[in-house]
Image (cartoon, rainbow, N blue to C red; front, top):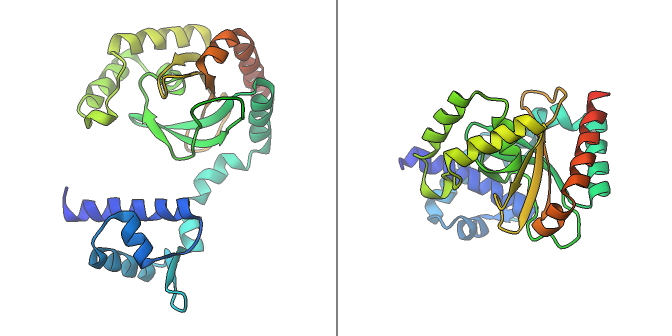
Length: 247
């Protein structure tokens, strides 16, 4: 990895640490959290302050992202988060099913969770905003692939095989294509153990305009419970999609 690329990665991790801490951090805390040389972190902090995306409180010797930084990506989230009917429908879906519901958006070979409602009830995996996972094998990933041609899916799968081992798909191409075929037939995708061995989920495309990124909805929970209630959850998911089409 080049020094420039390393600096970009370190910058991303720095803002992730602020998101985790949700408070101002000192340079010492950031050095510890990033596991980087003190001189490198100092240079990075100075540059980000100069660019106006970090603010420094000299009296407390702490740093915090600025409103400018928050504004840079706000337009993307606002493009669908301002749709209160969409969010209200997702909340009703979560309450009626009692399972974790989320919105995810595609990013080439991965899906990214952009909104989540985690419900209690014994689920052993919680959806976290910003979490990314391979497009191959998951319910929402399969729902996304169902809108693409088979040739495109094969090409994407070949590229995914060249990723680092931890990011490669674990499902075979044959299994992926079979799941895609079922998703096209039923109008939603179903997956067990894709993100966690104990989790099953249903996923479908959001049938309304959601801004520059297409959104997909997932309903997931403990696989024994979701498997037993699959027909009921499927029916409620179809009602959710019908509600959106009627908006």
